[in-house]
Amino acid sequence: MLSSLQDRLRPVASELFKFVVVGGFCFVLDTVLANLFHFTLHLGPTTSKTLSTVIATGVSYVGNRLWSFAHRVDDDRGHGQDVTVYALINVVGLVITLIPVDVAHYALGETSKLAFNVSQVLGTLVATVFRFWAYRRWVFGADPDHAERAALV
Image (cartoon, rainbow, N blue to C red; front, side, top):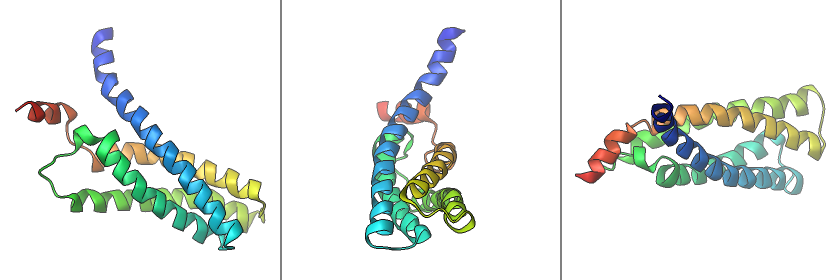
């Protein structure tokens, strides 16, 4: 029974590890860009976070498609559908991320670097959980066992 549970959790653990590595890189990229846009270029917090998230999302798509969920990608399928669904999921993720940023800045009047960074980290954490679940379900949802069997043929 324990072996069966381990066999079922191993692919999820591998995907999660790779997702965290890609996501960690993109988190750093997103955070650095958001700070650059907001505090150096003096763009608003919502604009800054939106631009940084769009850029990080593009990098994330490539990393997740080519590494984290590569075994789930059907090579015969065009990229159009998964890119569209990926983009829609990330729009929802962006909204989730922007809620604490906008609440801190506009509702609470917190405009410091610390407040901006804490609020974007909180939003990103919640959005990351949503994205992992949604990517596995709707973007890279192919049966990994099927993909491995197909690779052997």
